[in-house]
Image 1 (cartoon, rainbow, N blue to C red):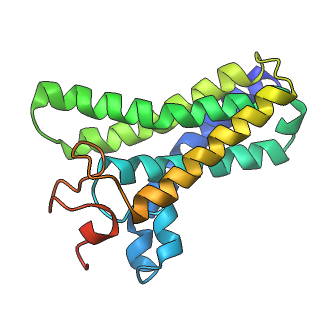
Image 2: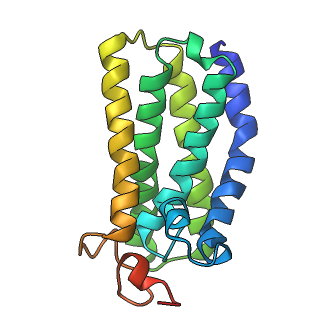
Image 3: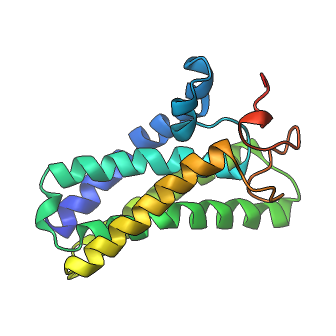
Length: 183
């Protein structure tokens, strides 16, 4: 799988992945508030929950790419890890950046920032996956970092830190599952 193929596949995936992430915004309610679904779906309006619903579709896409032949690229796993860590960095940078100028949330910019975050992650992956010459240790370390991020999403959904910038629901000033309107 070459760089041109990766860029093309990822460009085609931006819209479907963003739609899946958008649907994850509602999946917790649709599931009847199932605690396992809460790990993957947004449970409130905090930035953390919006990062989470961008992360999981991109991770699923990388798993699909790996199965379609990405395993042949030695840098696949480290590139995917770097790209997935770009999700929180990109989203927070974009949202906090525009809010510093606008002094408020603007829904269409929030939605656009979600699409841009997904696109940035996919672009970072496409540009690095074919360039990295990863060995066993860097692949193993990448897997550890991916597991840490996955565990963080599960842990901080159910027991978020009382941190007022990323984890608090701006609508009701509560955290985690307790911030959900039905709780």
